[in-house]
Length: 356
Image (tube, rainbow, N blue to C red; front, top):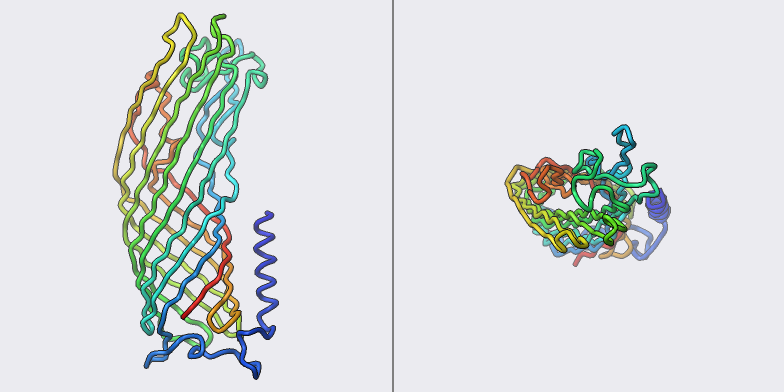
């Protein structure tokens, strides 16, 4: 809500300055012409370079619900205490950079956004369990304990991290403007990388009276998506300095994904002091990206404008780390890789656009 309020305030300030004389107007108070901003070709389209740098805040949705930890009473009834729903991502700062070369009504454009590092954690302790101990999903939330030290535990903690990078190259064509409305069509190639890690940590304060015991079950995934995309952009600019726009892009991509699962325990005697096993899996699938956004720009000088917007990005066909958890009888088994994950990212952006 706080970020949304900041965005609304910024948009209001931009709109309020739309009719305020700044350097973007000539000495007579008229807006600069397109020819004063950038050279024009024979068809009347700008010809030159442009670059844009933006601060890009993104928030992503939660992963599908997976139960991790529960309290089990004397009748065998389980009360789930910890799930992936307990993990909440906030807005993470990142950047979006764009560089383009305009050849009349056609443009070649490179764009990158990323550096977002999402992280969240949650935990429960035996104090949260009326029975006094925690059971894991490996036991099917049943008692007595079956997987040491994850069942009959005093602490269960989960952590989730996710990172996002996107790069694309597009050819844009600007159609002939109709009154105040201009449209641009694009075709291009896009690459997206999503890497994730999920860890389930468990500890027992005094295992069978012999001392503390610890266990970790960790899964990492890497998704590399590459394919083609189509899109459009509409810009309304009937006021001297203010323009409003909307964008939409869709991409079909081939996805190569892999996962690695690591299970390790540290136990006191007479158990084996240290155990570790690692297994992996990989797969390929068809993925998709749907991206939409709204933005506004205010001309500050003949060659510099301020920009603010809000974007929503849906990515399908991902191997999300929490969906790879394998609570089978063999905790060391990786199991098949699941490639049906979806993530939604959304957030505001603020930056400057320069032409020359």
